[in-house]
Length: 449
Ligand SMILES: Nc1ncnc2c1ncn2[C@@H]1O[C@H](COP(=O)(O)OP(=O)(O)OP(=O)(O)O)[C@@H](O)[C@H]1O
View 1: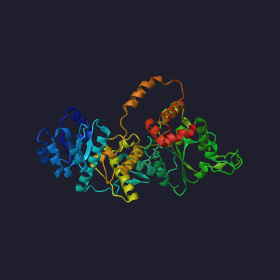
View 2: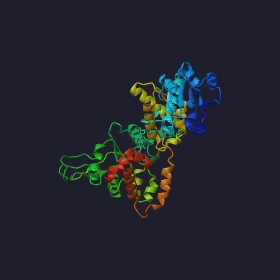
View 3: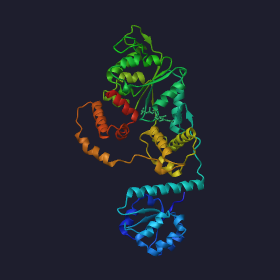
View 4: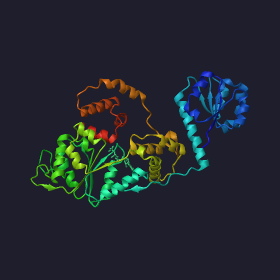
């Protein structure tokens, strides 16, 4: 794509410096005029003109009123704020923006962003960038991706799905562990049965027995009718134990017992029930570290991890990053019956980012870009968190003050509560600052009640 041309006639040095510092200007071809600016402008074929109104003569301003260039170009005038009827007339004739001192950098940046977006839009129409209607990636079960690591994962999933082995899925948050579990279920002999997912970190301590194994009517105050626990709900199918390392140790024993005996008893019932379920568990943590930190029982890990499976982070699936971006956009286009395209420059920005929040972060970013863009997703629509050096510095100065000898879970709770308070209860901002998914935050809050 060609770059827009900006014609600049500014004599005031500090103003010129202030303008030159704007990154939007660096995306353009800049043409500086020092004298005979009107003649130079006629030759320049510029798209946007930045003109210091106080550096041109009254006659020139007057001539401009009837000059076709006034309507053929976009104009930004900069004045010293003194009333100037000739300049006012130009602006009334639709010449563009008039900036008075002190210069509002934020407004100027927004105006330049809009100019760049309009320019790119025109280029797209001229080049006819096709709208994204189809996904180019392969799919296995619910998982989308054609990279080598994903194809290797599909091969393993195909083999392990048809066995009854208990699978333990590891991977960073947002990599698709729940989709992997669901895909295993769909590719297994149990696919006619239910797939039930529970978040072990969110189980309420009082109700954990009832949630896992169910209860019979009258078992405790409030048990007004029989309730099926997740083992019974998943009967004949698959039970997915998400964030299993977040389960309190006391509850882990209960789980271990069912896995060993394949039997459980609902609360308040005399009847032992058989557990005909396939268990798939997952965690964001390194299970060995969780065992060493005494957060996770080793015997439970060995029970669950008959087949350990690692889901690769998005940054390891290089070819899939842009493919997934187009995939999510194609689905939005289909759902909304729209024809939004994506510029190569936006794809380059997507490819250059590390995606610490993995596929979830990419999906949300594309959904935001789809809302922000009109017909073409441009780099400015791909909103990525800025490297927050202030946060890092804040951490560096505070890290020495962290008390020692306190259980990690309590530190986590304190960090969540403090960040939540600092963000006035805004959960999204809190999750972003803490580097966890909003789902994980909700789970933790549920656990802390
Ligand atoms: N390969 C993929 N293809 C399509 N969508 C995906 C893929 N991987 C993840 N996603 C999407 O990304 C989001 C996060 O996926 P999922 O909840 O399975 O991740 P997770 O690893 O279980 O996350 P967490 O550890 O935070 O619970 C979901 O919206 C899911 O649909």
